[in-house]
Amino acid sequence: MVTFRKHALSLNEQIQTLTARGLVVTDPVRAKRYLKNISYFRLSAYTRPFYIPGSGDDHRFIAGTSFDDVLNLYIFDRELETFLESYQRKYPDSPVQPPLWMALELLSFKQISELFANLR
Image (cartoon, rainbow, N blue to C red; front, side, top):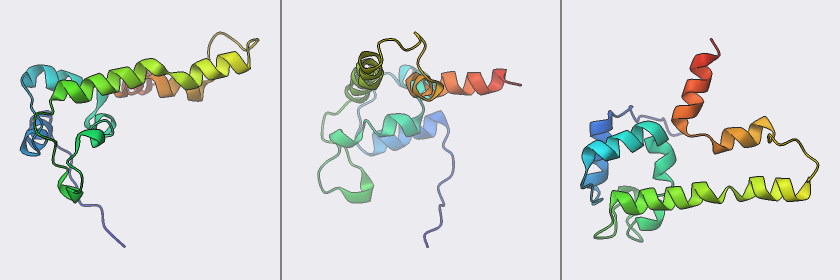
């Protein structure tokens, strides 16, 4: 069995990790703002198409890949929300508000965090 040994990284450390792997970050302040709102983990799924094939666990980026390339892919994907449109087409008489499990999929990490904070 493999033991999970990764520790949480600060926003600065997250950016250092990305740049060490070859990602071009021209505006670290802006990148930190997006990482804070989206989360490193969620955004990392959108970095995969930009990895050098065969780089293994090093996750090295293709030369010239920028933070904006990754962010634009995330934004493009987020705007699709195809599952919600499919639900609304299949169930035209459904309530305007989607089921909670669908709504949560549309929220950013920050929005979910605020939701839980406000439940107290």
